[in-house]
Image 1 (spheres, rainbow, N blue to C red):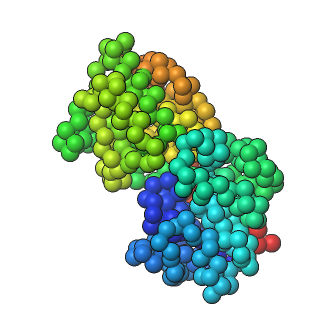
Image 2 (cartoon, rainbow, N blue to C red):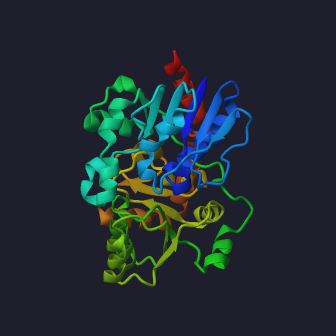
Image 3 (cartoon, helix red, strand yellow):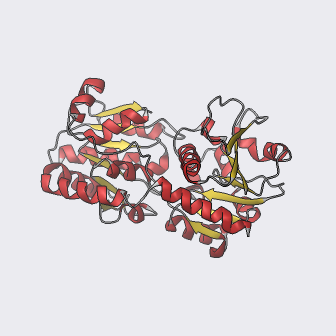
Length: 368
């Protein structure tokens, strides 16, 4: 079988869908030895995602922005003889001569349209057409599958749930002083609360900031909140909230950090808090659990599905609820240890090898 994967998003995004695409291709290369893969990459991207004889990078004529990709990919596909094309960024080419699979990661843009910029609204507004034109849809959680059926009108028979997984780099660092490393690298004292995600409205960081203020004022817990992640769209409210709540000395913004350094931050943190209003999968809590870090997450969308009973769940609008949950974890070593062990066990249920095997099986099912 000759399979194409549109991997141009990797050049534009190292996190999120870009990470999903990279991990999927690398994991497929370790198990798929009988099929031929063409990996469509941007000409601007000089990296090779995988070095296997049956995985070939396919050169592209690439526009200045990946938002135009569905119009240029058919020109490249005309030079190939694909049996199937997988579009991890959900937008398939509307002219093609092969089967099509798209991955839909979440539908937050339909549930929270006020969180979008005008440009992103135009791009994500193509979801209805994309779902109609593709032969099959991969949903990254049962929650996302339900949303696709409810909001886009796709048939359940057209959707397969295949979970994501944490990068294998994330693991407990045994026998080392992670807190000491973080203190030396970033001048951050031990015992901090960690938030990891792009700073954008659906991540609900202002609620966490309010909870963090209450943690200090009401529950008399003094610590630092470390925010890891680059600025997305409509991020200004976060910094206004920091100033309003007088948290300038207590909240540390690190921006995007390399995966290797994030590993140390996860291991050094006392707890990860993820108060998102919506997640299609919830990769950040899974990464933290894989490192043995206790997690507190919102009780909405896919987060209970991913975390299970391995974390504390709170209503995303309940700032006091998050403050109480943080107080419990920070003040109770036995609870931290219980959440650590449950998190490690839960994280082992997800792997990129499993994701790749289920995805490859779907490709072959569609071939018949």
